[in-house]
Length: 260
Ligand SMILES: Cc1cc2nc3c(=O)[nH]c(=O)nc-3n(C[C@H](O)[C@H](O)[C@H](O)COP(=O)(O)OP(=O)(O)OC[C@H]3O[C@@H](n4cnc5c(N)ncnc54)[C@H](O)[C@@H]3O)c2cc1C
Ligand code: FES
Image 1 (spheres, rainbow, N blue to C red):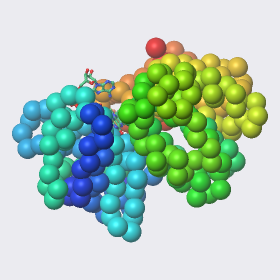
Image 2: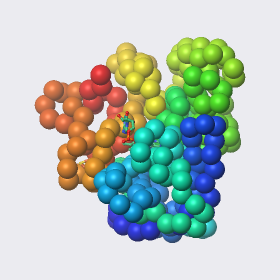
Image 3: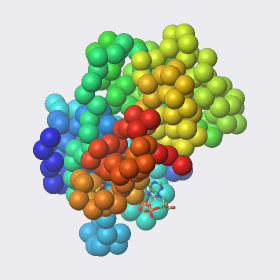
Image 4: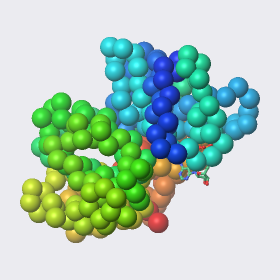
């Protein structure tokens, strides 16, 4: 897959709650070639503070309009600068990066996501539904105002269960309990998770027990985003060597990697 080093124009920037941004950008190559699990490196500031571009999942990509969307949690300096972008300004973009999910020879998937981790699976849900695959989504957050990508996931899911820690919306409690209720019937060919170490450990555990094929979207610190700096290494479950999240991932079979 070709990687593009280009500019993208800011079409719109919407603030969601107090800590999230939804940014629509225009760049024909990213919009055309972005696939499920691909991400981009974005730099929306002129100087070298911060030095590195920041990685974000491609949430939507429309080859016809040339537009793609990111959903960003404002956490530190880079994302605070992105929050100040104005319409029609430009950012640098590198991508699409990462190994896309291309194998859709399945009939039913589960998506267990928390917080901004939901951004990672929207494109997967969309493309799976286009191919007639059933998508069961378990969307979780600490509270209702932190549910991310809810409308899009409602649109692309066959069924969606929402769980909040404080019970403001949906099931009052842990989304893993809701997934457990579906594991045997209807069951999933694959269960993907993103956004929570607890969820990743749960999926790994279920995979180990042979109850599902589990897949983890991993997020690490990244510099180059394409296999050169080795800053994004995660240990192989065999104990020998490591994978690079940017190049070998970001999605891994849960039994292949070490997670803490
Ligand atoms: C492949 C990939 C896809 C991602 N997709 C998204 C996305 O779609 N939406 C989104 O909001 N975020 C996503 N992230 C995380 C996002 O890249 C970071 O939150 C962002 O780089 C923080 O930049 P900053 O300059 O604002 O924060 P910094 O000032 O760099 O850090 C602020 C705080 O966040 C912590 N932090 C920063 N990066 C990470 C990280 N990768 N993992 C854990 N903690 C971190 C730091 O320790 C620090 O406490 C993704 C990361 C990866 C690797
Ligand atoms: S970020 Fe440089 S090798 Fe992965």
